[in-house]
Image 1 (cartoon, rainbow, N blue to C red):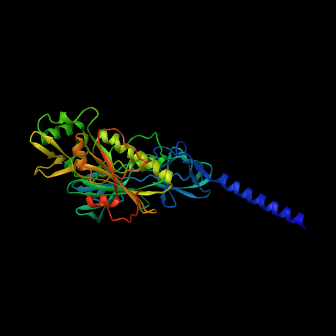
Image 2: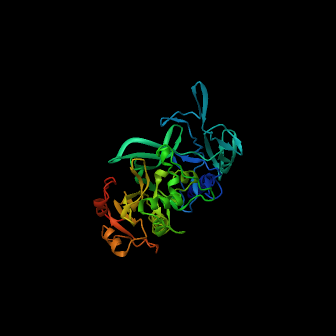
Image 3: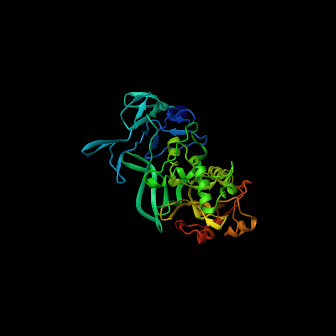
Length: 425
């Protein structure tokens, strides 16, 4: 009888092992480097953006699970309202056709005429869509997907308005980040996004897209022109006096489009594309962008990976940079209208407030957006006792950066939502 029991137990254990091996072997294990095609679609799993979910940085999808593969397209808008139409005709005597080219999912190079398909995991990197079965990297977009920028009626701070950015799939906006945007000054106070441990793993090899301003920025402003170096130099000469731009600009020092929510904080190419909107940038000196700011972004991604805990990041700007000119110091704005109303300020500060809600921990990281100040001025502009952590090392870039506790930061920069914080991050 004991022998029979032992045989039964052995058979049961063998069966468990076989089932476990079969389940693991049947899952789809995907590599960011080779298993996703181009132009890259938007991927949802369980209604949320797909992200690397293994220690190696690969993506594991359970066998039989359904992956949403989408190529969101641009629709014609009328007075800021989406029409859900790719083409409309405007009549008043003659017909003017307004068209937005369609994006569709392609399967093995063949157009499907569908903006979204559901792909079921078969095994390894094989998925099925209807009767078709093949490698996931054979599911692509006919053209790069188009992200949605949605203005809301929600106020965020004084004149600021909440703007949501993400992809609209099956009539639902899947938010990637939100911005507190002041239409009056065309200034983004802050951008809020989630940073996860998987952010250290990213798709590469995709073309860097152009920035877009959409309907948020008036056409008369020509927002893309404001970041051209020659325009910036002309603007400095206009504000500070003739030939003053030569004092501040060089081959390695100019105002660039400083990302607020960084492209590299998002794993997939389509999500990275959505960061290339002017609501997600502010004028930042290149030395700081490549120096302290770049060091902070990289160190923060490593830190989140090490702690294996997601954080909420508020990245924003504060104040207006003033520099000496022929007639004294002048605040710097990249745009003014015919009535001399100023817009697109050059910030005095860039900051990241990092909040770990699970630990109720937060630290603010601030960089002074200038390499032209002496030590005395930098000290005067440092508004808290330094609270930088050991995991962050600033770069020697001629700019000055420092860290604040949440309370000290919040006493100076008030537009961040109130948070529960007990300790430094």
